[in-house]
Length: 464
Image 1 (cartoon, rainbow, N blue to C red):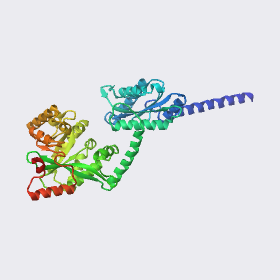
Image 2 (tube, rainbow, N blue to C red):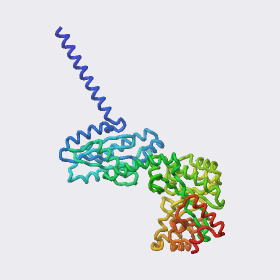
Image 3 (tube, rainbow, N blue to C red):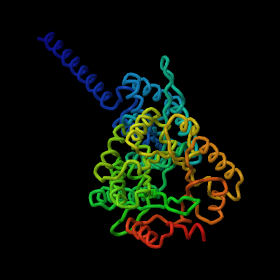
């Protein structure tokens, strides 16, 4: 009986040890990222809180990072390569921050680091975060593949005695979001103004969604003028938000937010549709130019969407000019070539916008069938004070002339600038010198008034 009892005791003890080991393993699995071996979000929260408790008089610092283009790596090279990249990034972060930090992969492309620093050395947090960004964005080699991603970082800190890990992580994420939106390459510290701006942005997001449902986004039209005659040859469509409380809101407020919440395509299509519907009854010689965002140019169905709008509005394809920027072309040249070729085949004209500010202007002119070159306003401003700006405009005009492509100059806002670009041989101009962007009814009134007078529109502004 004693022997039986002893064996039973041993069995029970063994079962308890097994159960304890299973629970320990389950706890590890519950707090660990299976791909990188780093902590996951739960593990980070627990470990960072333990670190905070040991901090005493030190500051708890949380660094938040987001890897850019990770989804593209998965799409182009497969999930196995994506996992290998994640492991390499995890190792790089670990090497950059050292052993005394808590490191985690919070989600697919987000990482976080928690560490303690004395207040006198708090600025070291930025150096550590910068080291992480450099480590993450260096080229990684896998067999014959070289993969390089981007990254943004945010920093938040508070005395360990009063810090709360969830709040501090949220602040670091807000700083990260600020860096991402502003395309800031260095790590960004959190400040209270960012939180207020985020609340305001949330209100803008809700307003945009409501505005899309209720037709609040309208086309405004900026005249494009033949510099030799003063006649209007076209209008560039610019989006405006007719807000019920704030009035007319410019695109610098809502376009970045619309891009962030992935409604820029829908917003653009609404504005373009209304613009073409309005302009279909105007003088048939007048062209209408519309801007295509980089996000839209990454949409393989863009050409079909534009053709559908032309069909719905009855607007002739040959009167439509689609403007694309150099930087948007650079993102995916093959897809861009497919889209613009499809549009050209439908009769749509193409303009290379912001020429000279992108990556490889001459190669774009050689490889894509552009009908118009638009010189960015940055070359026009202060051109009379900066000789190099005039030299650049003259060179572009000469090149365009050799290619039989007209040049449109943006940002003409004074008579002196107008006279200067005319002397340089530019054919078309736009800017506040010829008139501010206007509503469709104002355009109709302008065109009708000049038609009755027999004078070319805008000619009085040009000819004095």
